[in-house]
Image (cartoon, rainbow, N blue to C red; front, top):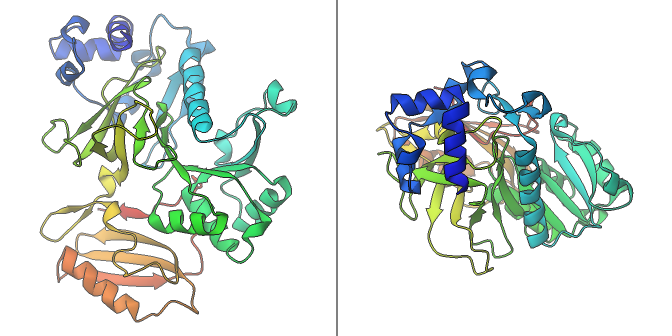
Length: 396
C-alpha cells in the first residue's frame, strides 16, 4: 500500500517523475509488485542536481513547511533535499527503534561525534534528562574530542568510525578514562582495524549503522552482528548486479532505494553509488526485516586491476598485510590505472618496516606485476572537510 501510494502521488504531482513514467510508457497502475519497479528508469543524483526544485518536488506540498537539507557531499557536489514532516518523524523513529533494540535507555547520555552542520537542536525532554545528547565536532582534534568525552562521561557514543578509531588509539593505555556501555558507528565504512581497536579499548562491540540523508536510517546491526537489518518499512531496496538484475544472496550489487514516506521530494529507484551484499534468511535476534551483509564501498571507489577486474574495498583490511600488528590506520589510493599509493599511520616501535616489501608483492600479485606500489608513512591523517576519512579511493 505504501509503495502504490507514493508511486501514484509522484506520477500525479512531481513533474520529474511524471516525465519519467511517460517516457517509459507506463503509469502507476503498471507497478503491481516490487519486481515491477524495474519498469521505472533509475534516478541518479547527477540528474537531480541539474533540475530546479519545482521540477523535483511535489506541487501539492507546502515546501516552505518542509525541512531543507543536503547530502554530505562525500562523493562530490551535495544534493539539495526537501523532507516533509512525516518523513522526518518516521526517520527519527527508525533511529529510536535501532537504539532501543541495542540497549540504549531513555535516561542514557549519548555523545555524538559528527559534522557541525548536522548538530540537532535541543528538545524540551532533553532538558529534563531524557535522551540527552552532547554534540562534538568531527573536525575537532582527537585530543579535544577526548577532553569533552572525559568531562561528559557518556553512557553511549555515536561517531564516524574513523574518528572513534582515532580516539581508541589515543586512549590505548588509558581506556578507563571513558567507559561507554554502548557504541554506535556510521557515516563511513567500518574497517576491521577500527572495529578491533574500538572493541579492544572500550570492551564492547560497536553497532554499525548505514544511514543516508535521503532516507535516514537504511540498515543497522543488532546484538547478533549477523548482518544489517534493512528498514523495509521505510524503503524498498534493490541490489542490482552488473547486468541490472537483482543480485543473488552473497553477490555484490548497487544499492537502489525507493522511499515510502517523503511526499515532498519522492525518490524512486534512486541509485546512490553505494554497493552492498544481499543475505538470505532471518536474523537469530527475531527481527523479521531483510538482511544485507553490509556496505562494500562505492562504485566510484572500486579499484581496478591491470587486466580490468574490479576490487572491492572489503578485499583489504588487513590485506595486503598479514595482520594489524603495529598498524593504526591506512588508506589506499589508486592514483592511476598503474599506480597505487598506501598511506600509513603506524606504531613505529612495533611495526616492522620490512612488512612493506611483502605487502608490495601481495598487491602486485592481485593487481598485476606491472602495478607501481608506493608507501608513505605519516604521523596522522588530516581530517577532511566532511569530518570523515576516505579509506579507499580511485582518482581516475
